[in-house]
Length: 73
Image 1 (cartoon, one colour):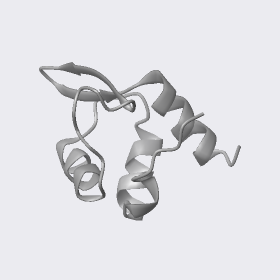
Image 2 (cartoon, one colour):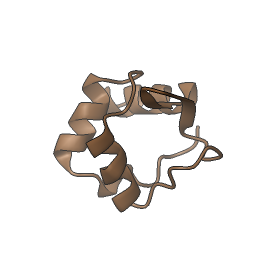
Image 3 (cartoon, helix red, strand yellow):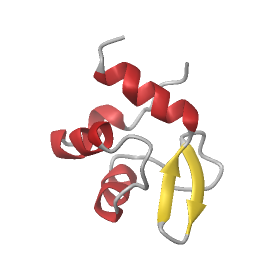
């Protein structure tokens, strides 16, 4: 499984939001924090899933990674 390189650079609040809302559209302020932490918010980034009018979703692989990280797997 790939590693989300920007994860350790996120503040605890953004990490907690992503864990609690895993699989939901990413809040705009969290997207900004991901970008500031070095996450390339482009359509070809592996952790980007669908993009829609409501915003950006994580890929299934990224959702699984965050779940595994949150549960200490």
